[in-house]
Amino acid sequence: MIIPFETGCYECTLASLPPQVTYPMCTVRETPRLPEHCIQYAYVIEWEEHFGKAKAVDKDSPEDMKWICDRAIERAKAYGINGVTYNLTMGVVKNIIPAIASTNALISAACVTETLKIISGCNFVLDNYMQYLGQTGVNTNTF
Image 1 (tube, rainbow, N blue to C red):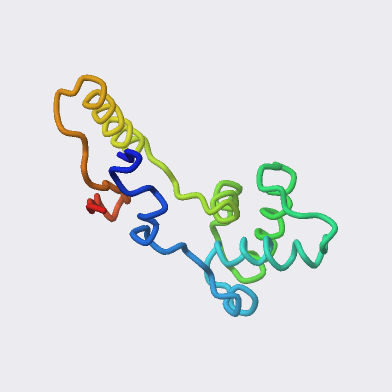
Image 2 (cartoon, rainbow, N blue to C red):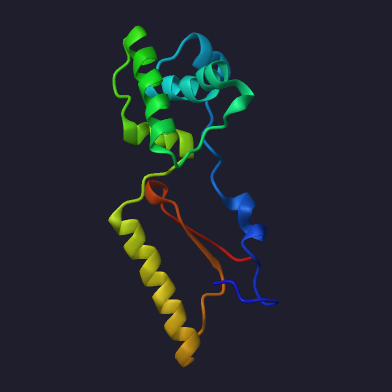
């Protein structure tokens, strides 16, 4: 719950977020072992070689995503790697963490509970920071 002048803002809590997943470029370029490496190669290297600075990747364009996916599939085949799909390509390019229904339900329940407490004054509002990290668990900190 972010309450102006009473609690920390979202920016104050960024240090508590898990680190972003990155792929070493030496592995992506020379020795790919995962479908994600092939997708990253198509996204970063092949796109630049084919289009140069003339065209930036439109991450919301099905045509651009299909082009990247097709190049990633070709690279994966060359290295005997299985598992490159359009959905995985979207996930790697857009850095999407797959959401599941239970995640949405948990966050919705927490939001509704806090809203009801604020509107009705029936209880104290959440005075700490709750962060749901999927398989990692729930993290609460007071800022």
